[in-house]
Image (cartoon, rainbow over all chains, first blue to last red; front, side, top):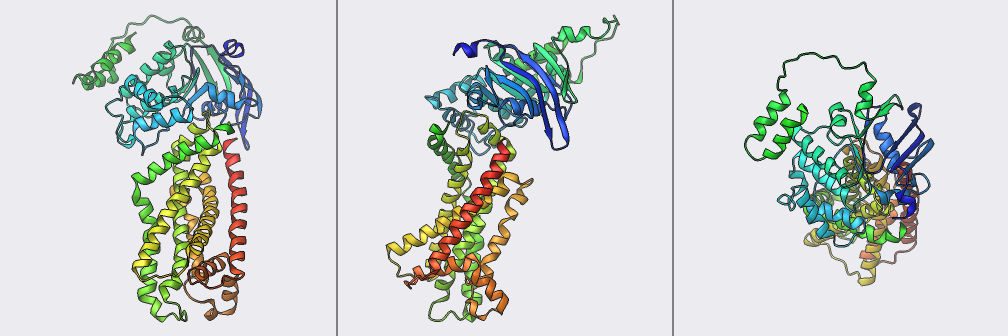
Length: 271
Length: 253
């Protein structure tokens, strides 16, 4: 780690603009993400979340503005940026024909790391995929695929991780598995930028939340700050009914196989 | 970045080769159509086609080999399309990996897969009575010509592989390429064709490539055909490479 990397925000975005032909997707986006925090970019479909992530991960060039990741400019130092990041795209980008372990070994080799086999085995263990490690990924469930996808992103311990809609299309249980993985990441000091269209996901995970709307960040703050934007809470007495999600998780988790996740699931929404 | 080019290409080539060994059916499928044509033309139509002193299977094989490659590269485009669609292409592009390795791995895989298909087709032809007195040098020349042809068509295949919106779209471009040998000297001598068709047949790339390979197999002097054939292959290769790289650069920026 050079001094250059250790200072300043993990992600710094200023005046970012991007158009696809006539369509102006980003009209001047500004935000900073502090090191080791989870930052949620919230927005509806087509708000430009994926475009921001693609620019930050050097897959797209911005029309205007600057973006820095881990102290490196995405436009002028893309190779350094790529050393510092991992991207988990909107769809689990895993190789269906290879086994889970082979996927991990492949990424470790492409990141030029020593002992790819051990890295793979450790991650399989950490993401409870050891038993499935030798199986073809095409036989995995959606949740397992996403876990493998995230595991692949952790190889080489990049300081910054982008998760683009990590739980879209997942069932409630798999969602909680992914949330757990993301929380663990932040606990280890990784900076996470996550995009989502689910409000509860941002609420559950993020230290700071920014809302991207029509190509601009319209608010940016902690959950508490965002809540203060509205008039103070009224006190109302509402009978607390279990949500269908609580019922589903309680029933599905009750067979003992996923006891742990079911416990966190039932307790989580009532916090 | 570039210092890892060869290592990264090797790793990614290993990945694609695993795909091939795990779905051998895709390679076999690409040989079915050319083998069916070989059977049909040798045992059904061939008896009525006058190819002079050369036995029909000997006459036909060079053209069938080109058709094998033309149908094989449809899978090259298809494999590339799947990588684009699944997002794994973007994952590789966002990693500290030599970026062009992703493309080169697909190109080399295409070369390996098509070589396997070509060997299978030649073996079937041998069973059907194909014989050649060609020496090692002539066989090497044939192999070199086919590799060059495969590379040229592979770079063409990269373009739809990168840009296609659907799997069908990715492989549809190969149909005209498969059809091209029919209007050439591959199946029948061009002498019987009416004027304009004959003019087209004699001046399109397949005829010169087929003639050059045929002459090598039958130990005839190859004459100018081999140079015209080489010029076509290299020309197509350069143009296709230029357009494919252009498409690729637009994709990754």
